[in-house]
Structure formats: structure tokens, C-alpha cells
Length: 247
Image (cartoon, rainbow, N blue to C red; front, side, top):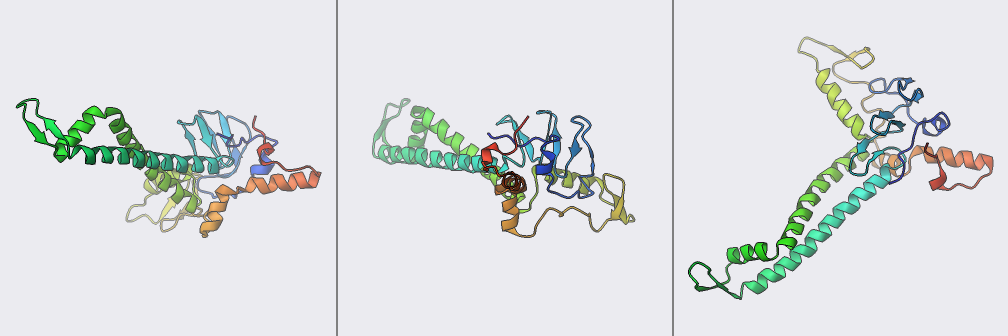
């Protein structure tokens, strides 16, 4: 998995692409890295780095998902959904062929020693017992596939709304904690400024109100344009994988 990007004094110019929303993000310094905390960035306590447009830290991949590798993570997620779906389809086909074949075969009842014709439940129990590996693999593919589909749909929703996972849950926390009572007309943001209880300023600041534009934020992130401009101005060739180097 590619680097998510790291906020360093020399890389701030590339990743400084968003305004502060006044709700989640305020202009200040990271207490750990001692660098400016850009809008939509977050210090990851696991990686001990400030990550631009931080989405989440993925324990499965042991890396953060940020501005540089978000599109790679989405592609990885969708490929795993397809892999589980294809695996379940192939395994189901194998078991279905066996099932149809065994329906016409005689079975011996171990208790009565009577020969009986194959019945649906008898065949299913036989397949589970005799084809345990295929059964376990099929159940695993179906279970993991469904979980991955839900996870993938959630992330596609976030991309379509131009939200990160971090922002989605932080917004939900703010709505819950700042929910006014019936006689309260104002609430406060994280910097203690008041706002009307009917609207929360900055909550949709990054949503470009266009599905294509929101998707381009992930598939063609803004830092790339700055790197290209810098390379062109310096008369150097541009190579994406040699863009912003990580520390």
C-alpha cells in the first residue's frame, strides 16, 4: 500500500488545499509534530505522523488512509468484494453440481441400514460432512463478501459526499453532543463560538455538490496539480510515484 502522505515543513505547500471549516478544523499547530495542522488533516497516534485529508488508520493494512493512497484503498476494497463474490460463485457452482448429482444416488441409513433415495436435506448434510473445506470456504466468502459490500458502500457514500471517515463520525458526535434542548436556540462549535441550532456552519463546506467533482477529489487529489506545476516550473519531468516523498 502506498504512503498516505505526511505533513512536513517541505510538504505543507503541496497539501494545503482546503479551507478551515471552523467546526472540526481550526488553524493551529500539531502538539506532537510541531507543524501546522492543515484542514482535513489529523495526527495518527499509531503511525505518529500527521496525515493530509486523513480518512482512517487501517489495521488490516497497517497504514493510514490519506490523500495520497485513498484511491488505492478504494480500488483494493472493490477488488476484494469482486474476489469474494467470484469465489462464492465458483464454490456454489461446485456444490450445486454435487447436489444435483447426489439427488439421484441411493443413501444408506446408518441407524436402520435401509437404502433410501437421496433427499434434499440428506444430500445437504452429506455435502457439509464430506465437503467440509468447500463448505467452510463458501460460508467464509459469503460472510466476508457481505461485510465488504457494506463497508464498500459506506466508503462510496463518503466519497460521493466528499467526507472522510474521520469527518463523518466527528460530525455525528457534534450533532449528538451539541443537540439543543427545546428552549435553547444556539449551540457552540469546538472553538466555543456560537451558531444557530438550526444549522451548523461548515458541515458541508467540502461537499462540491457534484458527484463527479467529489469523486475527482479522491481519484485525482489536489496535491497532484501542485506537484505538476512545481515540476513544470522547475523544468523537471513529472512522475507520480516520485511526487511527495514520505519521511
